[in-house]
Length: 168
Image 1 (cartoon, one colour):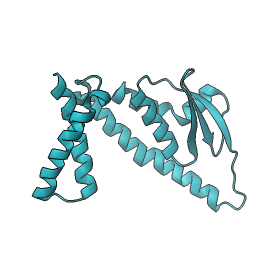
Image 2 (cartoon, one colour):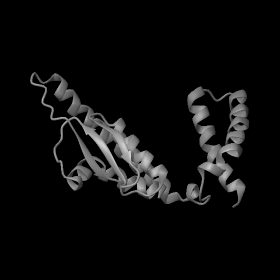
Image 3 (tube, helix red, strand yellow):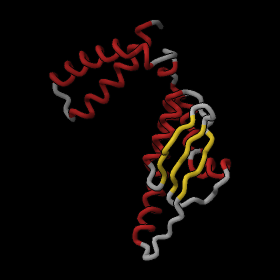
């Protein structure tokens, strides 16, 4: 699986994104999507895919599905409910602060996915990534734990659990 093994997954992903964003499946859209996606795959495959076999590992896709379900059905819902309660509470119970969280995933994709998951979950925002020490600095709307290990378990542990199996 040489160059084609790198081009194919990038092209497939670009095609899926193209079809989702156009919202149509006409002959024109499919043909245009295939052509544009293939060009994108050719241009970017060498910088986006380091191991051509990874995208074809079925276990990674299964973990990605579990991660997606957890993120959208549990983490997001739980966080939205928490923030809504804080907004509607007359005393606005918040205890904001910035906590330091160790990063245990390895690849750049994993680090980015975990940072995005934390930031997109209401109540938390990654404000800095210390590349040398592998730490996130996270602004948390209600700091429950200030120790690194406790904050890690509260905020990013479950994200890293799934993301590491998808990208690392």
